[in-house]
Length: 217
Image (cartoon, rainbow, N blue to C red; front, side, top):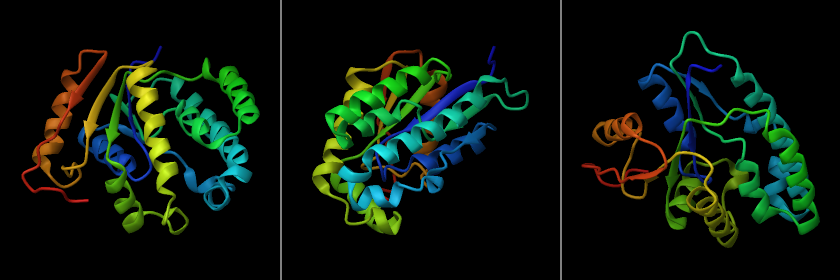
């Protein structure tokens, strides 16, 4: 039985989940489990032609996530927390806005076969941001092939994330708006988040960080 608390930081492209997961792992003396996105051979192709390469990209991610997630079923004797920047179910969030109907049905079947073998998180920190903020962050800090992203598709992805975590929720969730705060550099806002994680009592709760330094993205 897993004795380590399993925390997932999730959110749409550009919201800052990987950097925050790393910082939380350091602060909580935990172990970071980060998605190996760079190993997906279809990722760059997906952004150039989502219709043609959507299924290949999502299945490649699904199998890679499955391999990483199955390693988490064994207890970590040296860390109280495991902090990840991806949820196994993330694939369905993307699949709903990237795949054709027949591809989506097949993807769901694959997902159902694998889902029972991966651990569920104790808490998901769901990072939100408006589409304009996400686009700005992606264009400034994203990989070359992510820049100039289709705004309509990104809006659909944000809606899919909201649907997954706010309406079809399967986990305890802490919803965090990041539009006007910098959790990486504002220690007051960051420590407020840590307190919100520690005090989370289950279900869905919200945390709206106040940043004395304004919007730093």
